[in-house]
Image (cartoon, rainbow, N blue to C red; front, side, top):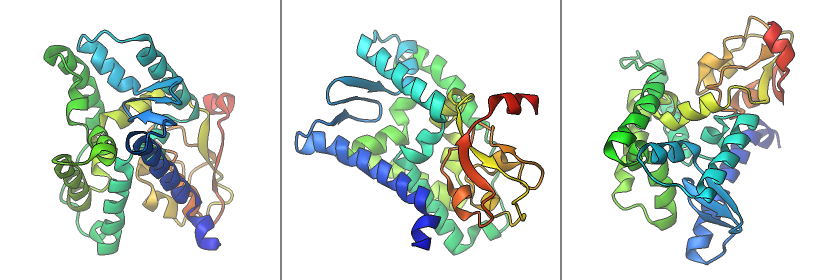
Length: 272
């Protein structure tokens, strides 16, 4: 039971990710139309539209005439993640997270992180790619990132069959394993950057209690975006850095109960 408790958020995330794949697949394989489509565009019971807002922006820039359902679906998703934590998509929904987590687990097993770091990459690259994808979509007349997105390739591949798309996913795995820890999600993926900006004022955040903290730094070592835990060892406050994925790994590994999810206190955060 202790193992289950220490991995409760990891298990919950895998359950959500695999359930979404199964539901999308069930609509295609067996005609069970609870959740139809894919992560780019889908609907719940054929009634509630859901659309990737970043993809919708790219398609709009490319000159596509979007229907009401696509716009409504994008609004629903945007509001949801703006309220509950933009980058929660990255750790709770995105199937590529399972690939990169597997690569990072193997990195730890092989002790690659203990070796001298030979490759460095700025985490701001994802924002540059995000910014460039919009004018590129306009110039090319097609949603630029969606054309090569490992997220779309994997989500469609798991439902309809991988084919040559498996090479892209293997490349992401190898990049995270041998080149840079959390390389794709933490440095390159513009969708992560988009949701980071979208969730700037989200209310569901991790809170650090400095009085309970013994500075073991397990949370920082396990965090895929360790810069968001800059307050550890310094002061009690919410994780306000929008690059936090709300994955909950820092909460799970903390034996001091110094980190927990809570509702963000905006007034207090603003005063600080």
